Length: 373
Image 1 (cartoon, helix red, strand yellow):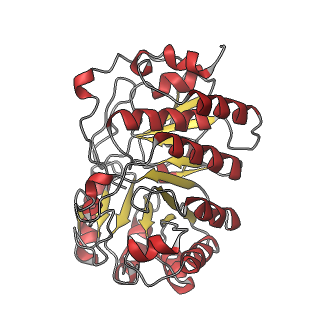
Image 2 (spheres, one colour; image 1 turned 180 degrees about the vertical axis):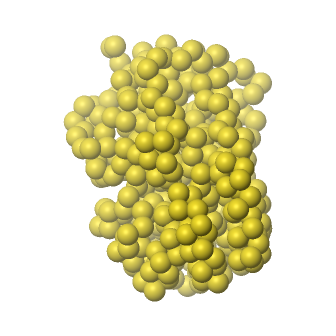
């Protein structure tokens, strides 16, 4: 193969993408110098909280990994990038008793895990404390059910409460710019507060999977590299990268869409900074052509996972000699080379052939797709 652009050209679904040739060349050169335990393998994930199916990836089973919000669609922060919209597709629960009954039904329906989320208070805290005893009872009753929790700023006491309750995976956003915390999140918190929260989470036995939102400062790259350095100082189980989605913002405070080249360069830096930590592309990112290019750069940069992959990604990964797997679960469940859900029984299937992805129809390329994290 003369170049990675040749590999792209051989995937019909990708042949009309306009990629940055210099960036692709840099990715190939950087890839050749990479070493580390997480270099080379890539999983493609299909969480069940949104229907997703392409010619290469089938939708996972119903209720395999549902997302649940303990505040329904309510969030006091009303951050400029979200306005609580990401909570709307989640299953609402309003009490520990309601959660208890819902989980039993999820298990009966074949559920293997779930994501607990919810809106924050004005200090970026999601108040799960009343739910901890119920979560403990759920784990005692269903020990193989994997529970991920998306938390705000956690104290050491809160982190221990999560651990004692039996939470398997802790997730939080890492923000590396004070202006972003103040202006986008409307918080009187510091970057140090976010770092301290990550430190308290990684001090437990839980798997910790922080997220970095690329373009969080109104579409501008501002605190992402500082956030990456924070993650480097407190090595988690995995890192999830997502890209800001401008359609959630209000007209009074609009967000630009980060250029795909900037996103791709951050992918490269994250891969190089964390060679022994899984680095994953989460499900939140702009739709249409932007999404296809972003996914292409994620594969080229050597990320270890892509949730809801665009058409052609499996074929491209195989043409770039990656070890390709397909897993019906939330990408934040990955730890090392295994998915937490059921270990070797997780449903991750190796791909031993190059799939034939059909050419994308032009009329469908820019239809927006609403996703959740």
